[in-house]
Length: 271
Ligand SMILES: Nc1ncnc2c1ncn2[C@@H]1O[C@H](COP(=O)(O)OP(=O)(O)OP(=O)(O)O)[C@@H](O)[C@H]1O
Ligand SMILES: [Mg+2]
Image 1 (cartoon, helix red, strand yellow):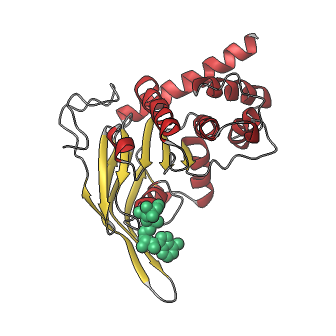
Image 2 (cartoon, helix red, strand yellow; image 1 turned 60 degrees about the vertical axis):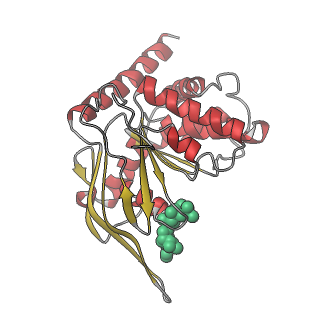
């Protein structure tokens, strides 16, 4: 029991420390003049055309735009899942292009969480074991991984479903497990791509309520791609893309306070 309390405290202290450090360091993501071109045998697609992008710690940013406008490409390139052709991306002050593939993989595993439209849970593992996976991969001891998985499942409101297999959970609950899994390593950023895309409007609203709570209470930074104006309206800022370009970055006001994790003004869709 004491070990569990110590493990939980250590996990929380780590998160506070990381967020504190990030706040002092300016933008958590800073990208300048990013170009990404896909070349197939038939076509060349300029998916990102000199894109500048910045996210402050504690911000919740929605990325919106028509299909094919480059939203997923932006997410993949900003998170280091995909390489870029030119420009620079730095996360928490570190330039991605200076990191080796191994260092980048480690960084992604420990400092970034991902949530997609498909829940991607392993069907033979319980909710708790699914959340334990990224912790074990990051080298966390089995005992601590168990305690932290339970903590994260409680955080997303599934403390009473830890032993359920994915098939024994509703779609909304499975997405909550995926969110708990993304939060497992106390990531500096959680990236979401159409994470409410498979859910009905009630479940979608509940998931967004959860994300908003995690953002306000835990100061968790989120960058979420969405087609839904309702989902986008809950973000601090909406970045709009069209044809590989950011046409509106929903600029923050000067009175943005990173430590508060929200805006002092009504920045958002209407700005
Ligand atoms: N691996 C790839 N190879 C070639 N072209 C690609 C590749 N991935 C994306 N593209 C092209 O890049 C452009 C941007 O795609 P992207 O997936 O970023 O769009 P999106 O805004 O996420 O669209 P959606 O809302 O439909 O998910 C599209 O024209 C797409 O066809
Ligand atoms: Mg996409």
